[in-house]
Length: 131
Length: 65
Image 1 (cartoon, rainbow over the protein chains, first blue to last red):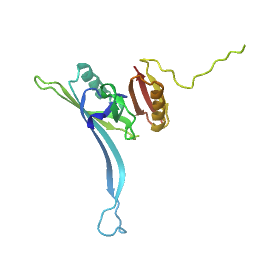
Image 2: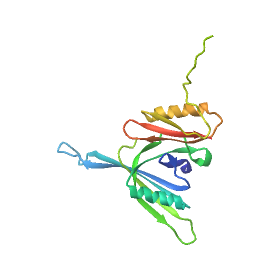
Image 3: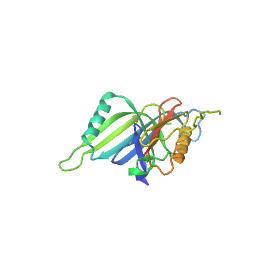
């Protein structure tokens, strides 16, 4: 189930997350030649990219401060995902689909409506291999 | 009388003390984590997420409480 698929940033599950989205894309280039028959394109993968977006409700001031510091630092952080269980559903299970890599926080959105919890959305753009 | 010290092969598990595991592959770190969890039977684990550190290096930090 979705609640057991959690994002890990700097080795820890993102606390109080409500949603996470993983995007892995390959950029294609038309590699068709005159040898290609039937009118169909022949594609070739020229580069790959990945990103992770995670939403967090009721973010504390400390969390907001840490995220803004991370954004300003332009630094790479270990980001990945895994199946979770155990206490607060934050314990990594080392599932076969778990992956991680270095990523940069490149999109930070803070939404604070009157009389509602503060919602934070972060996107980490992968830099280098997703292993 | 002969006295000798034997070296324990497995990492000592101390409650609340994080243990770092390194390995060349994700599977290697996962196996070490599995062995530690088996050793710490009955204890709750925190963390244990395998991180890719770049190159051929994977690591995980696990804490038993």
